[in-house]
Image (cartoon, rainbow, N blue to C red; front, side, top):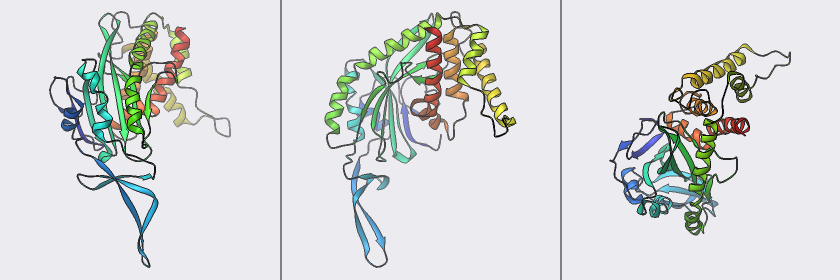
Amino acid sequence: MSHEVETMMYAGATPWHGLGTYVGDEPLTSEDAIIQAGLDWTVSKRQLFAFNESSGAVPVEAHSAIVRDTDDKVLGVVGKNYTPIQNLDAFGFMDSLVDESLMRYHTAGSLSGGRRVWMLGKVGSSEIVPNDHVDHYLFLYNGFDGKTSLRCLWTDVRVVCANTARAALVRGEKTGVSVRHTRNAMENIKEAQKVLGLAKEAFDDSAEFMRQLADTPMPTNRWVDFCIALVPEPATDDGEEISKRARTRVDNRRRDLTGLFLDGTGNTMPGVGGTAWAAYNALTEYASFHRTTRGSQDKRFESLLLGTGNDFIQRGTDILREIAA
């Protein structure tokens, strides 16, 4: 298992990254999911001290340490206004969706020694073309480093190939919910439960856009233009020359994307090949499995949903949105 994953569980189908402990197919409550994922611990905010030879321990008034109570591990250093959101509280506000059979917990775990925790909950599925389905998930993410807010994002996973990406939405619209770690954070979480109603609308919009892509032809000349826009020509040096290394890197990325467009997983299905939907799938498969990401598979997962992998997919999605308009 990846060194970044501390503990993890999954229910139902094996996650695309192949990590975690299988716990069965029955829906779990947040309390059960937290126990199965090894997240049944709390953190506390403790006094920090600085030490020197003359005065010994000196309290650091402006900052505190966030410490895991089960093993006294320091997870982060935070400011005086920081209030930790415990795992049970962070995940528990979704339980009403589970109780009403609107969502089921799929994956939960901790990364980097407990500094970050996350959960995936499945909330539905859409058929883009016959026999080609996309599953919809809520992605809940929290951290104890003083920098990471509690976030809930909308995520799509194409079933046939497990390509993973944030829901294909217009940039900046209905992208999710974010809650800062402050004294009134729990009140904000209660408000966030109401905002989760945005998820269905977001997934409907995403599926409609994907179907629009499937109705948009992608002939060779349009694909070439897409590749050039997505992976532009490398910058020149002072002598107006392109380095051999930069040239090779760009050519390789375009070649890999083209191979996935023509023969990627699920792209030869009826209704998919030769369309902008195949281009989108090439984009997400490249980001999910081929694009260079520093670190391990779970680092790639974080990048897809929160980092440069998401930025790459969003850039390609914006280009395809213009093509399909």
